[in-house]
Length: 258
Ligand code: BGC
View 1 (cartoon, rainbow, N blue to C red):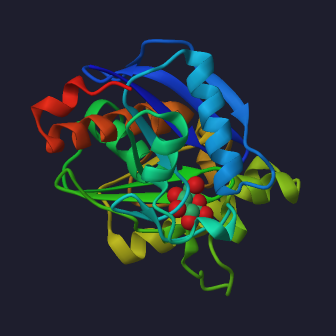
View 2 (view 1 turned 45 degrees about the vertical axis):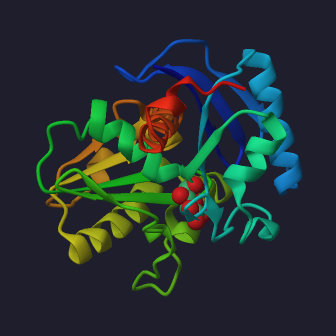
C-alpha cells in the first residue's frame, strides 16, 4: 500500500510517498521550511502545500513533535502553545481533505526502525532517540511501543533539561564541536541507560548521519547504532502508522481516498 508520510520538524516539513510493504520511498522527498510562527494554521497550510506539490489524494500519516494522545496534541515544546489540546489529526484532515493520522515524530521513526531498520532483529528493550531541534524518544519492549515517552525533557544531574543540553539545535546554537557535543549526548545516553537498561539504542534525526564524528565519545555499555533510515525514519514511520490505523478502522478504510 502507498501512503504519504510527512515528518513535521523544527526547521523543515518533509514528505514522500512510502511503499508500506518494504518502507521504501515511492516518490522523491520534498521539503518545505517550517513556518517560524509554527501555529496550527501555518503548519497545516504548509502540509497542504506539500500534499499539493506531491499531487496526493490518499491517506496521510504525520509524525508530529508533540505528545499525541488519540490524535490530540498534549505538549508543545518547539511549536506554538495553541497546539495543546488541539485534535491535530482532525485539523489536518479538514485542511487537506485527506484522512490524516498523527502520532509523535519519534514514535513513528521508531516504528520504521523496528519494522525495517536498525531495530528489526533486536530483542528486549530498544530506545530510539531522534536528535534534531528537540530530543525525541521512542521506547519499545518486545517490539511493543510505549507511546509518548517524552524522555528528552528529563532533567539531568547537572540540573539541565536534556533537550536544552544535548539536542542538535543546542550544538548549532552554541557552535559546539562534534566531540564536545558528543560528550553531552553521552551524558544523556548514560542517564537513559541507568534508568531503562535498554538492549539497543538507535540514534535518528539529522545528527545520526554524523555518528562517526562523535561515536568515540559514547561510552554506554549498550550498543548505539544509527537509524537505518537516518533522518527519513520519520517519513517512513508516519506512513506505517497511518497504515496501522487504517487497518484498525477495518478493511473498508483501505479504499478511502479524498
Ligand atoms: C517534543 C517531542 C518530540 C521531540 C522531537 C520534543 O521537544 O516534546 O514530542 O518527539 O521534541 O521532535
